[in-house]
Length: 472
Ligand SMILES: Cc1cc2nc3c(=O)[nH]c(=O)nc-3n(C[C@H](O)[C@H](O)[C@H](O)COP(=O)(O)OP(=O)(O)OC[C@H]3O[C@@H](n4cnc5c(N)ncnc54)[C@H](O)[C@@H]3O)c2cc1C
Image (cartoon, rainbow, N blue to C red):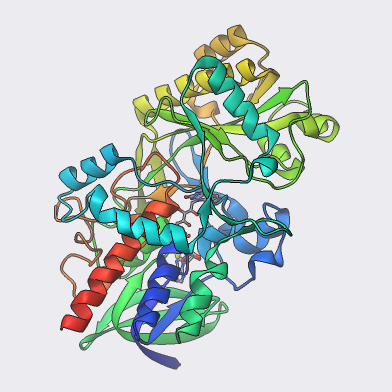
């Protein structure tokens, strides 16, 4: 068996793990970074293509949180994690939610003012920008048009993108913090899945399986678990290190609709439409989804003749979503090697999804859509608000096709030992040298795209760790 020794081991190379690795290595620590998925450059597959889904998503994007209804969730599974496949939409955390986190979870030193320097440096390093006006997709402007007509708050959301003359480049982890970590001396082990963490004298030992068969052991004084909200909790549970881990999974349950316009609003490329409507947030909010023919077909799968409609009218169609913040779930370790994920949307979540879908349809009709296809199991076609009312009155919970790409809260941070898996800076309660530093830490659903918030908190925690490390 191969044995690798380092000062610090980072498990998982998503936004939390990549940022952690780069900073730790740049401060002179010997860092090993292991990643269960493969290593591919950002440009290795066209954005939002089937090829990307097959190579860079876990289980080709088909994972289920069991509940009523079940919720399909997707996670990145490659070096760079979700940052390699996502839309790059950036938010800071709404102040009201930050205050509720600090108060309800007893988190020390987590205020808006304290986070600002971490946001600012991350925004600079990730090139967080508005899109040049001539690149804004028309489908985005349709959402704005509908919201403006109704007087609803909406805005173009910034993204981590560079816009050179030869085309936009997303600032994913393989474009930013991974190269920085490597040039500062970190060693990356792709295709290497951590299976067990245990104490080895004063150090931590981690068993891992590389390329599905080679067993290796990593030994380090400090370990940062950054496997994302499902797998960080699962690894802690598999290793019997925390009973609470995974008992508080939150996510953003989301429903999609496809809107059919009289004019061409879809350029059929993978361009991301960055407008969002926050008028009703945190109860529900709307935005635009990827609307390539492939993605339109996935959204129209249950619509009668849906695939034909896409073949004939793709340029007139665009996908939009309504997202809520309700419900709670869990990550469980049963007998097998994969986590069992459950999620209960709850009565309020159901009402918010239904009310949100009504408002989204209203917005899209106000923008000029003539037909809306909601993503539900017995999908029908909606031509006006009377259809929407009838549909929303009659639809049952089990017929909603819900999905999510935002997962968090499985290892909340804070000092409340009844609720928090890690302390205010990400160290596992009751264990020295073992940290979580990814989206698992966010105590509740943030109501906005979560990666920017995860990264600000991750940077804060690493700076705190380094302060203690060099003081010791
Ligand atoms: C399609 C899609 C679009 C999205 N769009 C946006 C957006 O526009 N804006 C936004 O803010 N957020 C977006 N998100 C969400 C965002 O990508 C995630 O919140 C973010 O990536 C979470 O970061 P993380 O560090 O917690 O973990 P992840 O990105 O999930 O990375 C965890 C990594 O750890 C690896 N890993 C897990 N377990 C192990 C193990 N045992 N051993 C070794 N490695 C392991 C995984 O393979 C993975 O690569 C999107 C997500 C998806 C899937």
